[in-house]
Each structure stands twice: as C-alpha cells, then as structure tokens.
Image (tube, rainbow, N blue to C red):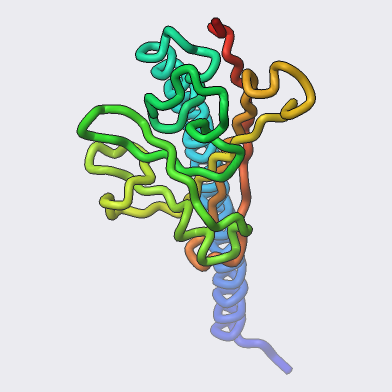
Length: 206
C-alpha cells in the first residue's frame, strides 16, 4: 500500500507529539519530586528547630529557678512552675515529675510554664495530636498556648525523667530531657519524628 506524503506527515507529527508529551511528563515528575523533597527538607529543619528550642526552654526554666531560690538550689532547681514551697523541702511534691509535658508561655510574668498532659499514645492517635499540637502565634513563633489559631502539621512532647533515681545520692540532681517532635502530611497517612535529648544537671547545688 502506498503511503501518501500527507499520511507520512501526520505520523511524524504524532510521533513528535508523543516524544514531546513524554518529555513534558518526565520533567513534570522531576519538578514534583523536587518540590516534595524541598518541602520535606524544610519540614525536617523546622522539626529540628522546634525540638531544639524546647530543650533550651527547659534549660531556661532551670536557670530561672536558680535566681529566686538561690538559698536552696538543691531542692529548688527543678521545682515545677517556680513554686516557692520547694525551699528546704526535699520531697518530690513541688518538683517537676518524670512525665509528659507541653510548655506554655506565662505572658503576664514573661516566663515559661510546664503543663502535664494525660495522653501518652502515638502520633497516629487523634487524642495525641490534640494534646501536643504546635501553633504559630501572632509573631510567627512556635507555641503550644491554646489561644493561638494557626496550626502547622507538628506536635511537640517534652518527656522528663531522672535516669539515676533512686539508686544514688545524685538522684534528683540530674534530669534527662527528651524533646519529641512529629509531623505528617495533610492526610495524616504518614508521619515522622525527631527526638533530641539532653542531660541537665544542677551544677549550682549548694
């Protein structure tokens, strides 16, 4: 069968369109993957920043306790929310217990407060995401104060423990801080977590 020039041209055009379409789809897929990688990298950097920031806040709480309670730093370096009853009181009643917390800002007194939480489940639990969700405040700082409305896809949990308690005399002079930040996609189909930890000591013990 004789192929006319017109048919030959049509076939060439179709082949060209197929090649161009393949290239466009390939380039588009590369673009989408690069965008996803960029977003994933950005979210990881944010998660690290959030986790590190909250370890520094716990350090700030310890350092703040040293100032008003300098007469009894042994019992008051880890008092919960600056409770004055810690002075000359060796019991654990007023201390930061081994537990799970979020950190909120006391705007009136310009200081950080630890708030105990009841939920200790995993990120894929909606209760966990509600208890530990992270907001951005009006100044674009990360916070866990409930009056802020903008909600990124992060949770943050502070886990406090005393690893040497009750086996030696330094049982309450060393505090292990774990800052656990989790994030997910908008559909909550997957999530990843970053955990940082640091041992705080009461090196000003008197």
